[in-house]
Length: 110
Image 1: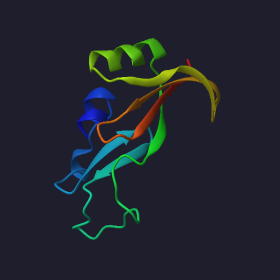
Image 2 (image 1 turned 120 degrees about the horizontal axis):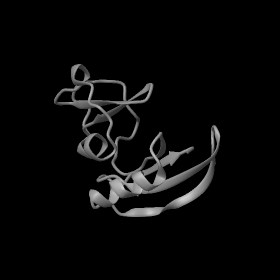
Image 3 (image 1 turned 90 degrees about the horizontal axis):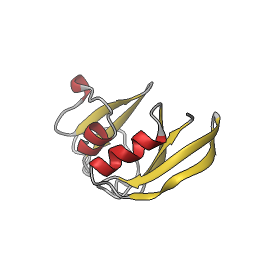
């Protein structure tokens, strides 16, 4: 949660965060981070594990600022900047890994 809140900049939704999970606002979506156990009996993925996700987050920030932010937080860049084609057309992406090993693509259409 620290990575997504302090490095990526997603705000914590405090009334949807407790000892079992944390919720962060991501644009018009919600990211929910759970413990590997399902002690609360919630509906969750069939096989809870860490480091097996890869996803893309769109940023309105410039790629230069995105890269500088990762450098300031000592986050290694896996790949990028690279030009890709996203849902809205041509974009520039930077890839990093979160502390659990998930591959996170940050893209900008700027």
